[in-house]
Length: 422
Image 1 (cartoon, rainbow, N blue to C red):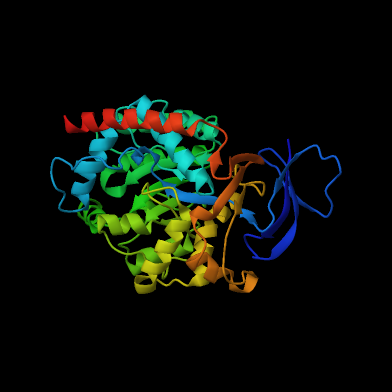
Image 2: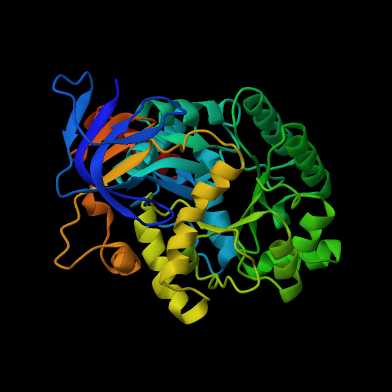
């Protein structure tokens, strides 16, 4: 059934033009929206009164780690990490080794719910579960679709747990890409052998997709590459032809030389910044100078709130980045461009968010950026529409039993934490 959003003010996501109108929203993966002047006297569609509300295209998370959803509040690691590599070893690699099918599903269901409640209807995810690889991407996809969120998934292929696990990751990726849109995931240069890197690039070419990899998140990634391959990370990826696809995503990109930035800037690849994760891990600060315009934003598994990520990028970037009011919004919306220009499905115009934004000052095209940075928050998300279907109404998820999923997630979190303590 189509939806009619009555008396709302539509904000065009690119031009920022404000239009007060009725909007007819078509259902389906390729559904459109249409402005209409008059409402039929006997409408055969659901009508939602949006008087005083603002409507715009919903949001995209450019880099998530759904598998981290059950980490919140867990106990301290067995050793207090002293650097980024130890954070990986004693926290995240300990956690991902303990994941099983039930935990993965609980993570995905919660992350999907948290995303759509924050107006994020499309998630680009980077998954890892080295002792539950087979079928893991299908589990996440099914959970997301059950909640009502679209996705672009990959498995984080790595040699850190041995060659057999790397091969399992490649196999899982190939099997998933046979029937689904997705990317070929790699962890990072320092845990990926030349053989695995070459196989991953060949796989991405075979399925006409891109690589999704962490790049120079810490200086240790660069040092390992220099010590073992005699070149820097981006040079290694360029040599392997991993940067040729406009579908390739490079995560973080903190510790890059000017030469590496130029290589990225001249390539069609995309960079995704994850400000709060960088702060949490104390690995450095993102600076877009020299990287070109293909920059989008993610959360790196810290949360599922892209409006929050944009604000963090702006305020931190005032000190360390070449960022402004217009460019922070551009990066926020660049994930739209990444998806649409590459033909990925699930983020068409009929993905919308209705904002109940109680501003005390005028709000219009001319001052939109100021409201975006200093005003708009996820608490203003009232309704969310995904592929033409109403999935959140008055802040309440309609597609699944939220209380049941949260209760189940708590059970799986306890199981996970217990395994991690062994």
